[in-house]
Figure 1 (cartoon, rainbow, N blue to C red):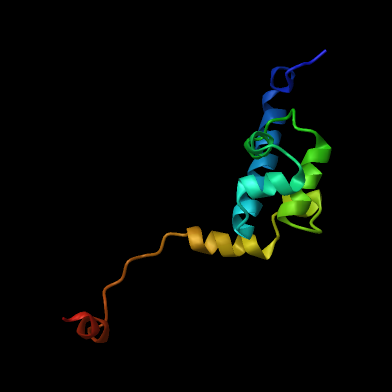
Figure 2: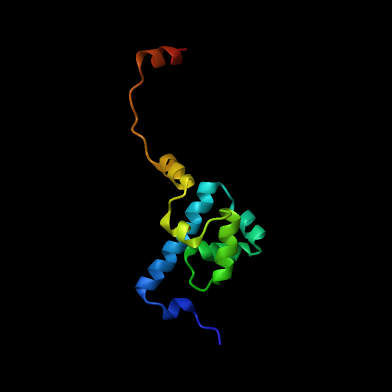
Length: 113
């Protein structure tokens, strides 16, 4: 009998599932792997990869492990959840908004047509 996992989990458990999915999505983006490519290499459908990254608790653990091995070879689930991968630091730096500063006189003169 098929049971919807979303229906039987409490809010805290659903939040944990969503956090795990978000960790998968961030490491994939940080490593520069497209979702459809990762899904094919892991032997999953793109829809399953989407569900995994969305935090669907119905995705099997084996599917998660195969997907993780494709996007971050050698990484464990513990390492994924601790978010200590250097590529995540690089992604965070790229995502940070930077303050706009005035141009120096040299930069202004270089831009003068």
